[in-house]
Length: 339
Image 1 (cartoon, rainbow, N blue to C red):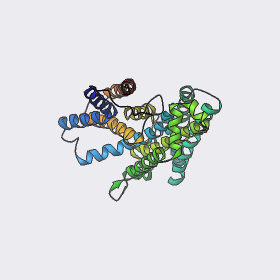
Image 2 (image 1 turned 135 degrees about the vertical axis):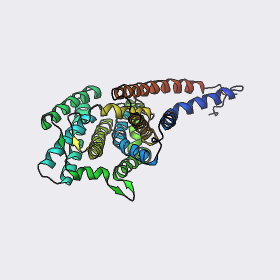
Image 3 (image 1 turned 90 degrees about the vertical axis):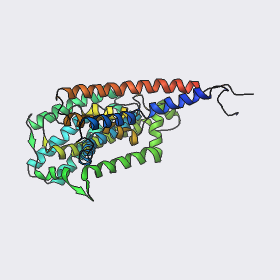
Image 4 (image 1 turned 90 degrees about the horizontal axis):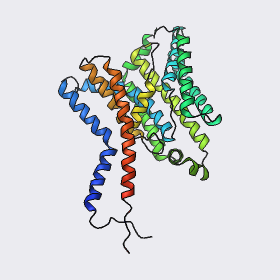
């Protein structure tokens, strides 16, 4: 088969296309640099080492939940229940701690609840055939109701031992960043270096073809919801360790932050394309940078939901634009083959 080469006279157009493609693929990095420069000029406190470290610690929880969401989105699914998982797990852990249970038992309970909750989502979607959006929307409300029932809508202050987790350091690096790094490396290696990772991309790209190729698509789709539940539980632990209390609003809207982080990082809502590094990580850091900058500037707190909704809107718009442009660029690469 003859190699496909650009038609004569189209080199400048091809170069322009490559620039546009590169810009679309790195739009999150460009936005992050612009945000850092803008807040850095508005406040000298923003770009200090202490604040940047604090920013990364704060972003670690959203990034971990976003990593789990990336696995789900790669299979063309969605998990709207991650915030509810965080709330239920935190409520149960708070009750256990206040009842005199040890910290390791409470942490184990959080992780177990995350995995079980993910298995419930997987059962509803892959066994009962429910749409992921509907199934996880239902478990979102189920989780919020369970959490409010367990806490009796009252805030629970956790023992100092839990706060110590968020403030602890190892080799001078905050413990949340070690946890985040371990999750990130595990997820990145899984997606890029294992047959399981390649199979997830195949399922998201074209499920019917993956099924004909012999892949167990049902089991693969089920596994990502368990991973998402586990990541939500780990993200909940880090968030809880920083707050030190379980409030009735704990975990609220975290599902949207996780989706926004993944999509801002280049993960497609239609499945088959995306990466946790640098993609989702950059998306989470970008979101946290904006929130951190607004806090330093003492912006009106009522602006925060507006900014968050604007970020989600930009994420979805960027994903749609990227898909449309890359599809057009792909068609333009089909040139006549010289005889």
